Amino acid sequence: MKLDQELFGATFQNPVLLASGTCGYGEEFDRLLDIDGLGGLVTKAVTVEPRAGNASPRVAEFDGVMLNSIGLANVGLEAFRQEKLPWLANRLKRARVLVNVAGRSPDEYACIVRTLDAADGFVGFELNVSCPNVKEGGAVFSARESLLDEVVRAARGATIRPIIVKLAPNVPDIGRMAEVAVAAGADALSLVNTFPGLLFDVVTRRPVLGAVSGGVSGPGILPMGVHAVWQARGRVDVPIIGIGGIRTADDAVQYLLAGASLVQIGTASFADPRAALRVLFGLRRFGEANGVADIRELVGAGHPA
Image: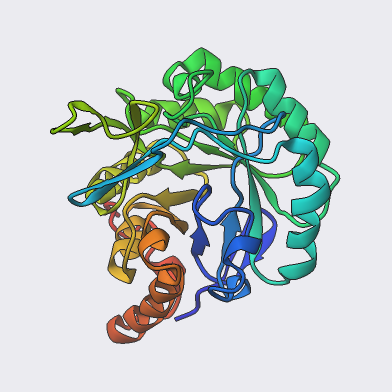
């Protein structure tokens, strides 16, 4: 099966990417798997200032899902530009890089995008407007049409590079939010971010996370993520990156059929750092077993003709 696609003015050699927040800045995974054999990766979120993140514990497991509240811990804009991007530019020759951007205001998003715009080592930006794990901003930008429009337009005005907007799943009409993002200048969408969640230790009667609530990810959210992609694909005609609960090639195909062109592997990498490679190998076997000559035959094939 032909796996490569031309998207955002670049060739993605296959549709499997590592998700933001689950592979650091790439270097952390370099000895665990051949990142350059994947379609690409999305970096850990970049904010203007360095962030230490939320109080521990930051991660908890439950049946079928993971609950996390990292709080966008990162090295900050200048350290990312000077230390992390050069490694990506020198190390990765085939895998494509997207830089995840987060901020407290539209101006902060624009500042990061503008500062990194001339740097080498990446294709475009993924705007994280939907993180449920921080107090400032959080999922607010992707829950209100006016704020989403403002953030995307601010970033759009700071670069000609591709802008991918990562939307929250917990909105009344994600198709509508997709329309708003695209109208404001988004070149593509990432769907979905984690769901807000809370769990207690039933013995201590205290929340299991130090920040109390967090984001729910893992295989349990797969149907909701696929549904979000399906809804967005029916409303906008831009590439979509499917995220949420992918562990196997069949999971990835679910997103492709719903309308995604690429997929991101996140939580599965914590249990198996080579999960993305296993999904990739599985996609090749799926194509052979089902007579699929080109991955693009699957993209959106679940929609009515």
